[in-house]
Image (cartoon, rainbow, N blue to C red; front, side):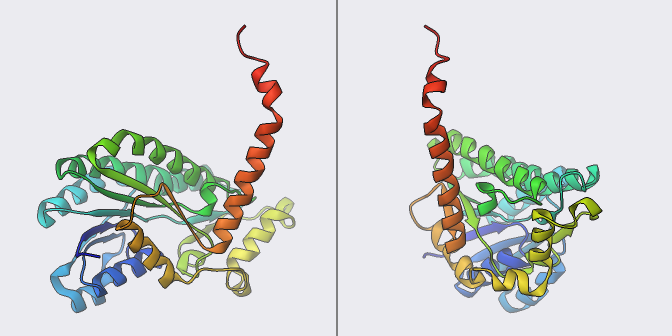
Length: 279
């Protein structure tokens, strides 16, 4: 892969951190943004001016446009935009406060929308580029106990699938990255929990809460190696564009089963669907 320039959100931890490290190691240039960019100081010391950093909270619309404009102005060209900032929120729908839901959607849905809208004029002006959006197998599959998270992931998938059709003529390709269980800090600092209600002390919500918080939960489940995930994301950017990139056997199987089930259910409704056609 020839040397390229990436713009990454959420670059200080998890998948974003690993992608940033791998790119720098292989000679690429990275505009790395995060709410706490000081957590990238060790990489700045090691890689010098190949790492451009800026503080960015994707819930701040003005900051998103300002940082994006500055990155393109100072770096000249950005080949790949990796929209990766986000966090998980676990609990039953009625356990969440309005503020918790608003923050989840603002970060995981509105933030990527803001970023996409901010980078598109620059990508058009330079004649194209790639947008990679971290979604999840949770963008096509749902699990009780994560309704706002799924709302955001399903929402960003619908938004970007639509935008992809709008910008293809400008040489801009968009890929939704759909990892399964990856052993990162997502199940630690990047996870928020609703205040539990007694009514949900058992059942599927409680099971998901235990899975995400107990040491043996995420670790014991089928999981992807985060370094392999980072490499797959980087390789995707220099390969023929795909709309969705499922990463992990768990992601592939869960999405396959969900799509197969929906197709079976739809097929069974064929007669009813056609019966409503105007004569």
